[in-house]
Image 1 (cartoon, rainbow, N blue to C red):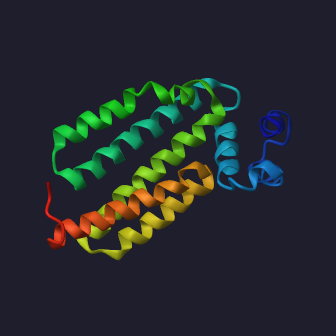
Image 2: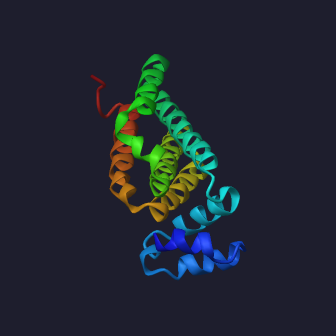
Amino acid sequence: WSMWCYLQSGSKEFISLLTYCLGDDKVIIRPLEAPYFTALYLCFGTSPLGYHIVNATCEIAGAWFLCLALARLTGNMALCLVASSLFLLNPIHDATHYWITASSVTVSLSLFLCSFWLCLKGVQESKPIWIIASVLIFAASVFNYESFAPLSLLIIITVFFEKAFRSGLVVAL
């Protein structure tokens, strides 16, 4: 809350606000969260509509990346659309609609799902550039909100099984 207080009462220049926010000891574990909140505040101030639009956009992007990743894994577009719809309708992430500071969770989840899709794309197409992009986007996800770090295991396990299925080492059930 101290960061939001300073954003409200402090300088209105991006660099000044960012310097203050990055100096906060609580922000050191989430270095991308400070520029994200600073940019949001400078764009929308205390008007909630802009924050809601950004949150909705991030949730829709997350559902889209989930759909793309599942399409790469299953090839079944009906399953992808159902899963993405359930993702959007899930009542658990309602906090992102009501709580401004929870919006960084939505951003990190969308970045994680983008990373997951890019990694699958890179493995399936044998293009290292997509895997490198995936790693960089995953790092952005973790540096924005660290709770997605353990999901790196999901990516590793999925890639292992994807390669095993494609090479014929594992027979699909």
